[in-house]
Length: 155
Image 1 (tube, one colour):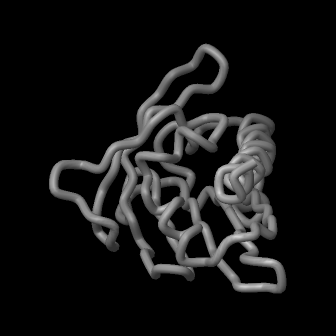
Image 2 (cartoon, rainbow, N blue to C red):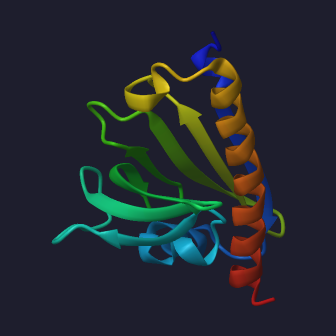
Image 3 (cartoon, one colour):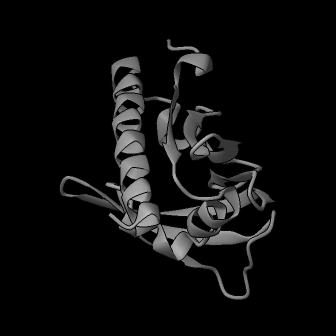
């Protein structure tokens, strides 16, 4: 069986914009559908704000498969980090994180995902399928960052 350390994906890209602006773009989860190849839309749960403990719901599509995820924000440090756990801190299987580092030419944005618990449908999933999900996340991260760069830089 794959180790959890093998079930991670990440990528980074330097974007010619300041970290606070990029954080504001990413933490506005209602815009995620503009960049992500899997997420078609997101909405904050009633009364939620951009802070740890808040929840939002994402609509996703991979091929013909459509599904919904509820996510709990675990980090919201403007200009530094925005992260959430799909399914929430107590039971959720997956962590998504954005980190922002000021560099020459703008900000390095790192996006990462990791399966942190093999619960729910992941508990009985064959290793080959788990690794396929990670590979799909890796490709999606590259696309998301490229699309975020184009939006931030106005191209």
